[in-house]
Image (tube, rainbow, N blue to C red; front, side, top):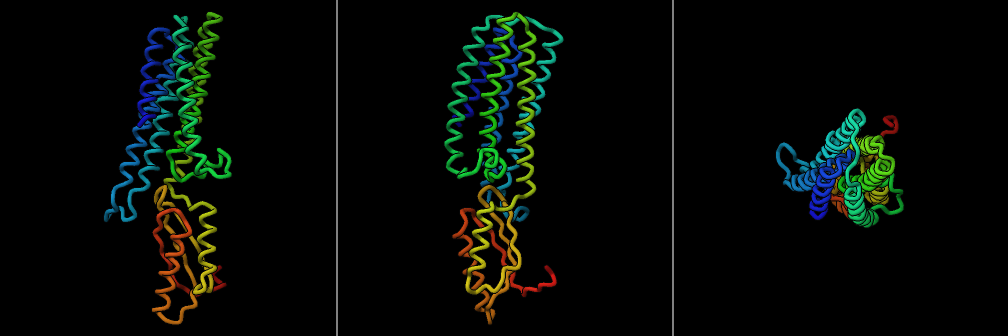
Length: 295
């Protein structure tokens, strides 16, 4: 909620500064902050909808609502942020006008850089708790919780966009040539377009259905193969039903000599799998006989 109101305040300040200076880069950044504000609302909406109880139509729950609304965030960032900034830059190229009172622009942009930097620092701190030894790019690619990658990329894009705007306004003020301000707006639009495409690609992958992490798959595999009642793990499949919900399906050959023993072995194995992973698991274990010719 703090990020929502912070982005809203920054957007209002940027619109006010644009009204005074007429800088295209500032208008692009103001619309960017509006998009970020709306995106925070969409992430809250997704988190709320994901908490709904399972229904007959959605027996595995609504966890993927968070993936869907994060995908919508990417669409908003591209349409409202990127395309508008590029359009505004091209418009100023065809109809140039000087920046008035650039000091106001410098003050607002400087304040926004400080606030966005604090937001990015907070997001980095939260992400580091989950990132482990992964690189930042690998974390964004493999994260199952969509909110942190969205916030990280938005905050990073905000700071880079502000620096581009600062450079565009500064060069225009020094040279008296509004070309640099227009190019700054176009640069911000291209930056937001790249971020939107990265986000859309990652969220699409989550919507289609990603498997558990390599560490979780290895842990589940180890639990099954080391169980004394298991003769052989025939196959194992996993898929995220939501950021913290995991579907586990396994075909297993057991040593059990009776139906009672088989039921007990399956129940024990399910409990062991749940202890091995952090996610809430929906588990289906099918007993079968291993046939090498089917490999």
